[in-house]
Each structure stands twice: as C-alpha cells, then as structure tokens.
Amino acid sequence: MPLLPQAEVGVFGGTGLYTLDELEDARDLELDTPYGAPSAPLRVGTWRGRRIAFLARHGHGHRLLPTEIPYRANVYAMKLLGVTKAISVGAVGSLREELPPRTLVVPDQFLDRTRHRPDTFFGDGLVVHVSLAEPYAPAVRKALLEAATSAGRPAVDGGTYLCMEGPQFSTRAESTWYRALGCSIIGMTNLSEARLCREAEIAYGALSMVTDYDAWRPHEAGVDAAEILAVLRDNADVQHRVLLEAIARLPQGDLPENHSLASAMVTALDRVPAATLERLQPFFLPYMRRGPA
Image (cartoon, rainbow, N blue to C red; front, side, top):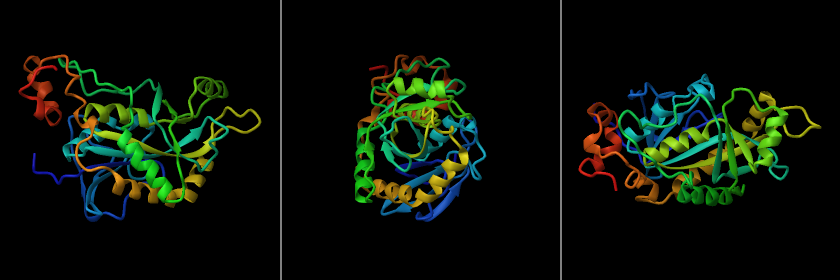
C-alpha cells in the first residue's frame, strides 16, 4: 500500500455535517479496506496544527441508511490514517422533557437495539474482548463539554444513548419503553462506531444535537424527518463551532483507549490464522511479539 498521509483526529460527520471546509492543505482520499470502501472519500488536512481526517458517514448526498453505513470500513480507514481520537457529530431524538430540541448532549452510555450490523473486527480464529464499561472516552467528552461552554451553548453532561436500528422512527410503545429504561436520547449510529473504535484503539466521543422529542409524547405527532432537518439547518453553525473548538482542546499524546487491546486478547497471536493477522495488521503491529496479557 502506498504511504498514506497521517491524521491524529477523526471526525464522523452526521446528518447536516458533510464537509469540514476549514481544513488547510486538504486532500480527498479514496481508500479501500478489507471491509470494502468507506462511506465517502476521507478529507485529510490541518486545522490549528492538528491533523484531521473527516468522513461523511452517510456518504455524499446522504445516500446511506444507518444500517447500510459500512462502519467497519469507516473505522478501519481511520486506523490506516493513524487516527487516535475521534469525534462523532449527529442528530438525536429526546426521551426527556428537560432535553428539548436544540439541546446539545455529550452522552456517556449506550443501550443497543440494533439487529442487522456487523459489530466487531474479530473472529476468524482470533478472540478479543475489549471493555466497553465506559464506551465514550472521558478525555474526548471533557473536550466537547468545555468546547460547548466556550461557544456559549453549554452541553448536557452525560446521558444514555439508545441506539436503534431504523430507518423507521420509534413506535410510541417503544419510545415509552426506552424512557422507562432510563435512556435520555435516541439515535441510529453512535454505538456501532463506538464499539469498533474501541477495538481499533481509537478514543471516541460524541456531540449530539437534539432535533425532536421522540414519539413518547401522546399529545403530539410522531417524529417528522422534515422537522429534524429544519432544526439541523438552523443550528449547523453551533455544532460546527463546538466541533472545531473541541478538536483544539483534545489532549495531545496517548489516551487509555489507545491501548485497549493490551489486556483484551485471549488468543495468542502466534495461534491466529495468517489471513486474519494480515487483515488486522494495522491493529496488531505493536503486539506482534506478545501473547495475551
């Protein structure tokens, strides 16, 4: 493979965020991975001295359903570029009265209601169990919270993100159940990215913009896509400002999540099939001479 430009910070752009024009000396890279092509070419450039890789998770023109997003290819591509910290930006529905539309949330937990997605890089002769007790990296969350305050739009600190399959929105019964489970917001993408980023030793955090109340409010109509897009259009500049400020505030150097495989490997690497090791070489180069911890 030819030598690729390197980046430190990855950005997964969601609905309404399809580019990052502030990047200097930017170039678009069409990468291939063992899991196919990413959602779109990755735009790699520099901003305030930080090397950034931007990816529109739904593809150019927003053409991929949440289930169709090639999550493994997207995260693998970030790994190929050397990304160690990643920020996700996306829209969510609210499951709490105190989280009205236009609220920013920096969640700290997940519940999973997806059904149709590959959610690991491992298998095929390699058993690895990473910890997801804290699925969002605390240092990335801290940068996002500080950035929101600095931008004049303080974000809610914490909350459980219910990741549903989609593409349909929730029924009222489902939405009421999710509230009873203690969830705060609902979306369709973050959990898939967070799991794979942890396996790829990328520290991951998310900035979520509430665009609507989910279907739990019986006196209101259900969720409407046009309403969501209108809120995102009106608040695109807010997300943009907070994202850029958060990138500037991310700590330099290694984070604990950048070593998540060190104690997670069950299969000794010398027992792993050669084809599996070759596919995952970007993950395991630091561990090639080590067995399980």
